[in-house]
Length: 89
Image (cartoon, rainbow, N blue to C red):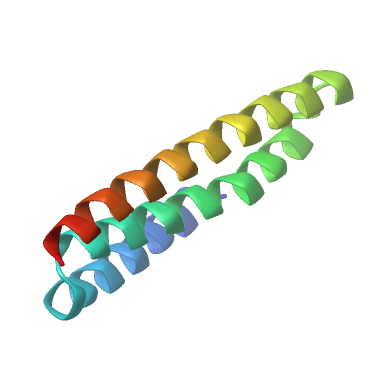
């Protein structure tokens, strides 16, 4: 991804985040933003692996470890959100 494309992606995410805050609040908008960033990382990493020409086995192992870590982070975010949201009800 070129620097210009990266700036555009970040700018779009920031704009949508800022539009969401008044409607759904800071916390939910932050969760939305985090989800968007995390789901964007996989395709960007895959493109970087292809562009760099890393050895296949290292790329696959790295990707699998990253996915396992992202799954754990996603589960933790979901648990934190559920605990905090349910406390307010």
